[in-house]
Amino acid sequence: MDKQLGIGLMSGTSLDGIDAVLIEIEGSSINTKVNVIESLTHEYRSDVRTAIKELCDPEIASLEKICSMNMFLGRELGMIVNELLDKAGIGKEDVLFVSSHGQTIFHKPVGGESRMDVPGTLQIGDLSMLSEMTGITAVGDFRTADMSAGGQGAPLVSFVDYILFNNPDRSRAIQNIGGIGNVTYIPRNAKKDQVMSFDTGPGNMVIDEVVYRLTEGKQAYDKDGRIAYKGEVNKKLLNKLMEHPYFTVKPPKTTGRELFGSSFVDSFMRDSADLSFEDRVATVTAWTAKTIAESYSCFIESSRNSIDDVVIGGGGSYNPFLMEQLHRYLPNQIVYKHEDFQLSSDLKEAIAFAILGYHCLIGQSNQIPSATGAHNPVIMGKISHTQQQAFQRLNDLRGNLH
Image (cartoon, rainbow, N blue to C red; front, top):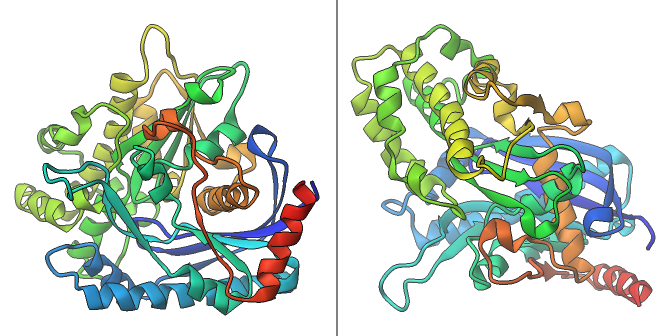
């Protein structure tokens, strides 16, 4: 199969913005090969970030605003793709697809007692708008296919982690620290059904929100861990944070702003009212590291499983204080960054969703049931092409597959 050009778009729970990457891709499954051509990052303006955050809060979100933001983000994604192509000097007619994670505003992995209260998830950023803005086939809305097969719709990047990090001699925990933390555990010389993955808990989400509130919106995150370095970790409060019931739930499991969003931070702010700004930030940063280490100890490491390497990606990998805490809580593992494997932490998830989108287009399953809890493998993703030429490019590819 010939190499193809595709674009991956990632906008995560941290609400910091959108990462876009143009890749060249060939092969499939464990034989997939990817080469990064160009990339860019588009930071959300403060008004957009605030508006999205409000949509994640069921108490103040409205159907009208969700409807409008869905189309607005589709348009924004399209503009970013066009900017990326201009930067790369490549025309839309040469690109097979654009694959978008979408912006998660609600994720409900477990249903309720009513027959209508079923698990579900909602990512916005309309695919038809994206396709129309770019003239390229758009792929997205991946999580619902996994949930339709009984999975939790996350973590989805485990499929890509298996492709990139499977090793015959080393067992690895591939840890992403975005808004939420999630891990993919890959035993030595693993088969796909031996891969395990789950959300470890908050990544940067609570740290960012605490910083944002205590600086009255002047800072969106703790750059280089500078605030945390000035504080001390409050062990009593740290232990109380570790008592959250999520950390005792067995995998597969996922979480998001539903558990660790504004209401959770409200409670934290009350419980930490007698602490300094710096101590609060140091404590929640250490908490993120400890939740990761405890998750490994409770749910991965056993007489049969061990972890040789921990590979950290996502925005949290750029926080030196958080990395120091991880080294402290993981004394028996070698802790790497994605960059040690010639992979950008900033672009990893955008690359991942490009790979997921490509597999959707060629009709191959692109999730790991043992990671998500699904009953069976599925082909995740929905496809939109509003222009004839976009459809024709995809049709030509499928013709070449047969």
